[in-house]
Image (cartoon, rainbow, N blue to C red):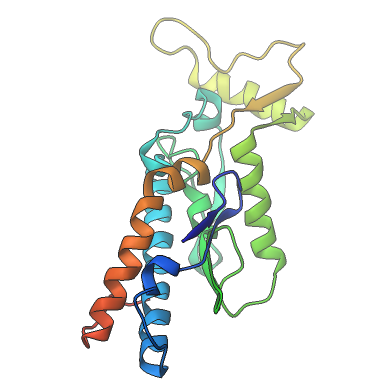
Length: 221
């Protein structure tokens, strides 16, 4: 199997399937269908696994940099179902919401191409929404700086006045007048995820294919 993508912040791209099907003498309709299903099931598994690890703050089993005290305690509201809003928990994982943007795409079977990450889902055309997730994923994986607006500075000062000092007597909401930007550290997602799980992909597709050829049901997609 040919592999591409450990350094791609948008996702991993897996090409080729020679090791899985080299033993097939003839690709009839039944084997084609079994292979297609085996590929989709593995793509779905990787999607769910990546989402789970992002929500846990440990893509590939490696913890990402934690949120700063200010980032955790700032008043932030997010959209929920039904058009309502809810405050984010100060104990949330840094990248948890990015899990919503993880998709999979099986764009070709002959030759075989499968993508998992912040990609356009199978059967869909590019959308501005998915492009936004892709951009956010790239920014957070590479790290970035953002300017502190006058309104944001005022909200931080007001929040600091309410919270006061924490254990040890420090005031983490204190901002120097000279501070003009916040720096968000790089939090890799795709590289550690792929490094941890790439060896299982070929094995799982081969197992799924064998089970499907035996008439066994595979997990849903």
